[in-house]
Length: 634
Image (tube, helix red, strand yellow):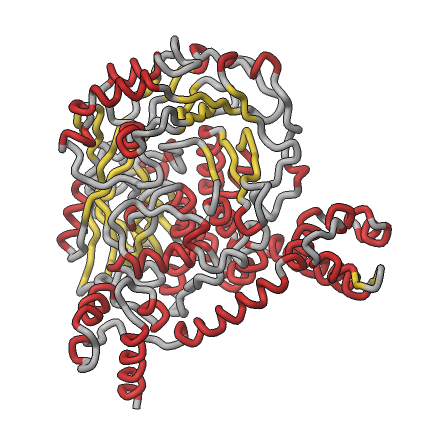
């Protein structure tokens, strides 16, 4: 069917029927469409071009602190992101190796073009999925229920559930100095009509801003002047389906500093350079030409990924800022300048690059730019990512005010699952804060509001000892199996891992040495038994995977802390079980404070636990609300 859509051969007078429609094929849209189709819904994925499916518009990497955990959670549920980066990554690193497992996270540089190709191929091979190349312009509704989508080419597609994953396309406006031009990203048009349609059906829209740095011609970069950064010698796969041997080649230390143009035989390095006072003065002297400081850009950008001009102003005492030069593909033709995102004029960007050590003679391939775009404040959503106002309309990704590929993918897979469960008339899947970083993120969006692009950090998760990258499968693969997304191959592998963990734990608890069981010795902070565990003869005979050994070691080390955390979780679950009607009239609750009435009416929490996390809501308010609900139920 999609072939005829591309050629414009559909009958414009006819409406085409689907179970589910996904608008946008970025990282949220890919996971949403894949999940919906794999579970069994006849799904249409509407995108401007199949050639930009899963395009890495910003940095060419997956993972990072907390983001790596989300990528592994998407994989544990049965999603695509981890499989894609394992197949197309060019450098793999485990961050925070010197710290505890709770804050360690995988990160990988991607060959961005191979990543796109992998994702597109996976979607094209799905039997329930049709890729439609078109621009969605209108959400069609009937009596506050979604019924389909109309495109700018006049074609209409009908479906009882629609998932919006529009990224930065909603009324996108790009800035380079005083230049302003509409666009969803470089080279793609903005979706202005869709913004108007969302307002017409009653959704509130606000504006946010993000940006990217310049890209350089790698052949013009002097790599000899740069500090080199290698990948791990023993890379750890993102996907639980892949063993370490999945990597096609071992890492290689490149000769001559990894000069560009030489075909790599293994992992590709990145390079590090630093800004200097000359660059800082250049930026300070030209702030009057920076859209962020002239009033040209009105929206708020990401606090934790600021532009270089914001860094110079905010951290005026710093003499230099780190810049990572990251290859965008295996051939190292284009270099991404991570750390100097900017919307400064082109001539200033050129001077900045000329003053950056190692890039003095570099040619800019694409200039950095900022982009402002519409988003829907996520207080308009239910916990299943469905809008409260329009039944069957789900939102995922940057339209909810988040930033980052991983945050988008995490929302996308949940929206895809829940859209199909709505079709099946089943209870939605809501991941709780003790269950997944994805659950923390969605709960934050619903209870804390957004006034800047949301980015996930380990510090946001109060149960981060439980929410580790290594155990995402033990937390979420049963959920993926329940909803029909984790296939039999994944389930068989997961069950074997659980059996191996139980076998090893049983052996450790029953085997004693020096008056203690091996399990008790593992729990001791200063004991080095963990380093030699794999070489013990009886354990060697078990032929266990590395991740099984690691899981058991971590479980032993954290046993006491995890038990304490489980008690905290149990007390919170009592509040999670107390449902609040979405249409509750808070103004009618006599003893509720005025501020609480205002906040609760705005956020419309679905449980007492959610209500307790809203800023300004006190324990006394929760008690009053609890009493009111109890009386009402009687």
